Image (cartoon, rainbow, N blue to C red; front, side, top):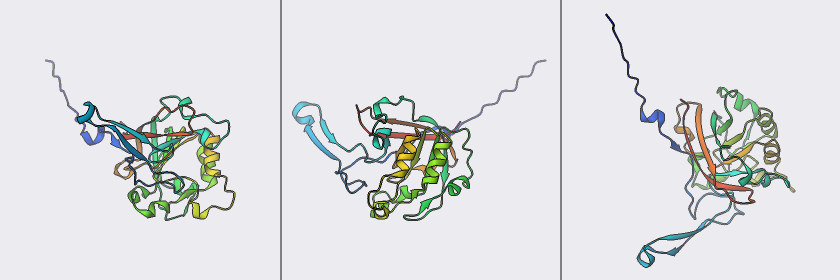
Length: 232
């Protein structure tokens, strides 16, 4: 007598679906004050040529984007020089409790609890993503240089944030500000992904991420689409 017991394990769509972690680019979106607004101009309409074509003008550092080393280093790699899979990896989410214009310390990240040893990327989640589209989005927290050094020492491939920049907001910058956090991270071969969103929708602190910047020749960064899902 042979008895075969078969089990069927179901996986819900919520466990396998990709979540969009990118901001939508539009003319009125949040950005650093010195950057021009994105613009979109119709070059042709369907009723004229049967094909609609749009010309888009956008800075390399607006919306969800990746900073290449050339952003801060004179001899740094440009965005087109990175391997296509640089942003396709596992990532640990560190959800920190921090307020407006406050520094994020090393202990703030360590105490959040995820395992950092098995992740190629690190996402610092502050909840600032909820302020996107509001003027308070500019009053973001920032990394200490000690945190930037801790990240490079752990040799992450990339670090992602849900706010404008890991460096201090403009109001807190001294004269001749030299962007020490950007410099530390990019000099340590840690690329930076800025303006992530929907991080708070994950019920786990370990996710898979697919982050693909536009391949722009000789550029210091590029807009990108980022998607994430819980690690299997």
